[in-house]
Image 1 (cartoon, rainbow, N blue to C red):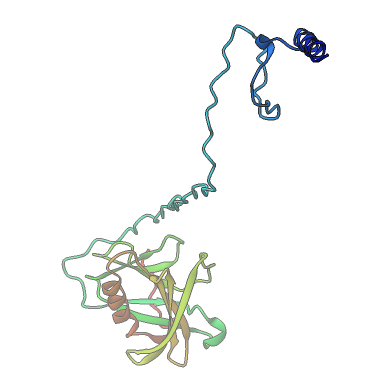
Image 2: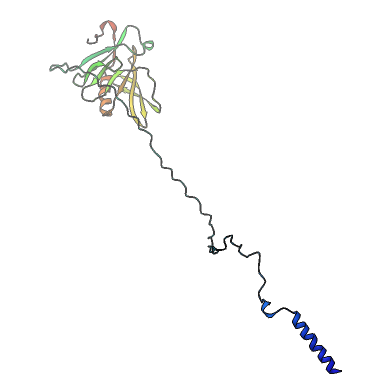
Length: 233
């Protein structure tokens, strides 16, 4: 009986062995992570490109543009032609006379002119660039003493006001400045009979030009029109 049972067990074992998988088909491998698997290339002959890690980007601020200030075109001032001065004679008088109509007729008595005296070796009586009688300095170009005229101010001009005694008369002195540099000076004053204004223009040697002009203004007085010295022709 025991022998029959042993034969039966052996038969069952052989039968189970014939039905099971062969040893060559058993694969001991770890499960594949399909989520991280690299995709198959469409070209079976091309090798899979190597993966190059990209360094992390850093928040580097963009370079700031540097703005270099540029100067605009510098305006070139065009000066008026120099005045034509009379020839200095060998025997000039010590002082010459310049008589003219006051610039402020409403503040002057009718029938009176102003009179100033000047050194003909320093000044020459002529006409300015606007055709008005004027004194032109003989040694300082563009230094001109002329009757004041109402003209527009250039942009940026500032005016400093002062009151000074020059000779026997108190003058209101108005200095026009551009960027702190004097451009011209106006003098307004009178002797109680006439009230008139003068303008001194200059480019260089400003202090000398003004000092010589004030030497002339110190002689300002009034004279009846009938006694006025006519302008030279």
